[in-house]
Length: 466
Image 1 (cartoon, one colour):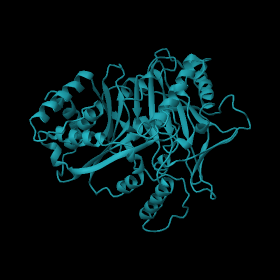
Image 2 (tube, rainbow, N blue to C red):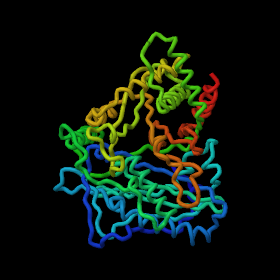
Image 3 (tube, rainbow, N blue to C red):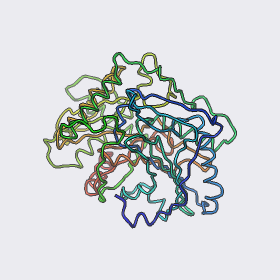
Image 4 (cartoon, rainbow, N blue to C red):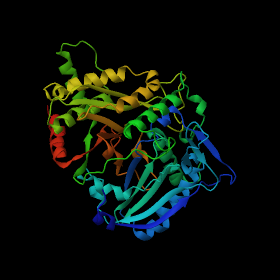
């Protein structure tokens, strides 16, 4: 929820349209959604803000240098990523939605100025989540069509600037989003150089294969869920692209970024090894950075919530299927190529005990160990499972990845000061990214009501001293 006071701190300078450069004026493109995309087409958009420290960023420098360079390089990058300038549409004659780019299509590019404190918003102390929302542009979504992505660049005079983006999850996953942002940053910084192969998208949909008609199965699940959400009635428009309503953000919700160094993670790894060596289970744990950090965060969140220890608790995390598919999907494949692991294994009581962290790590380790190509075929049942989460359950999900390399997004004015996934507010979710210093640490973003966050911060820091 954005308050009047927050809105008044933001001055909208311009809302521009940026079209792809060098694209044939008659060129159009249609890209069908796959079952990987269709699982997301009704779910909330993904919002990110990337902060840059630049103390000589005055309004004249912003207007004459930063904004023109960002616009020009965005236009150039879009010529390689035409679908991002297009729209998601579902024609009545089509069995599923498509991304359609037509001549003169463009992305929305908002230019703004804020009197907020960039140091606070990009720092490691808690602040109210609602303060981030003015920095994220709207994304147009209606019954008939939806924009793929929108951008906003906001000046903090003599402090720096930020780039906010709002992306439709049915069009692109985190890997594709980050690859595009790297392409834009490369073009902005290097100007007249060509786009490297590892930043050039692959649009070939034939690389996505499935043993059954998963497109139809996923759409059938969505149709059933639509009836369930509307009290058993058939939806008025079965091909509506309107998103499911997202909960209002409580004004008491705060953000906090917890940084774990490489040494912290290694110490947690050694602790798990010690505890597992004296436990009754002889099964070897897969102690990857993800397993350790996710399990540590999950355990702390369960303890911070307190309350009913009989409540069901669970977790879900995205799984990049590009390397799991046979044959593998190219790493630069454009779109979604992710499934998920989702489990509600037990009650909160299990994780508030002395060896709760080990119990969490065992579960997450087993889930990661079991991953193979079949996780992609389970998308319909995963969608159905999300709709049957027990009331009062505490379910943790995760956005982002330490493998995306978001702190390498240098547009020519240095690496980001902070990268924030704003949309974790819309669910019980954390965000993950590599540490800014690139030394093997991890940043974990949290969004919680203030009283829970106060408890969580103590648990996270005290847990490192066990």
